[in-house]
Image 1 (cartoon, rainbow over the protein chains, first blue to last red):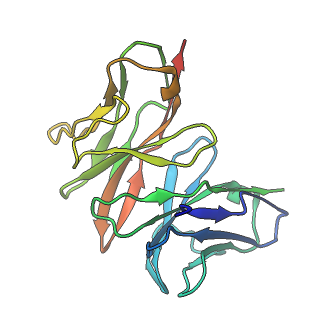
Image 2 (cartoon, rainbow over the protein chains, first blue to last red):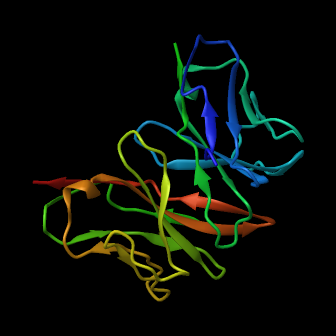
Length: 114
Length: 110
């Protein structure tokens, strides 16, 4: 089991471009969570997805950000028309189910907007 | 509001000294709390959870409901303990999610 895989590890985008961050959960995990870590800050919850469903997107900015977890393939966090303030590390975690079970994290994608 | 607070952004202690990383929470329900650790250039990984009451790498954490705290302790710090530590709480709001504190960067000086 390769663990939670995120790619790319580093992504540089110019202002106004789109950023696509991918997360492949651990085998057998159907729950995916995305977190954002701004410089000098902690991890902020963004969105919780199960296959083909967004369960909780209370931490997602209302505009430009979207997430999906299709039946086949990785979960995608998409940021349209990126701005400098989007520069951050984005972490994905997966679990079989919360409620005391462990959430496993990917190594993160560091997005830099220039 | 559900919240996890780690009051210290940075903590520096000498090798062999005791370590305590503070964590306070605010939650109306029955809390499930965790400590996660992130070593340099590695992914976040679970260190321990209060349900299992285990000791990992010499660290322990006791849930104190009266003080709403879940402080992480180790009697004798080692250099390899230098890392970023996050306290986390499972919150049930229609669905479950992990809410993290701001993190504490622990540095162990030789």
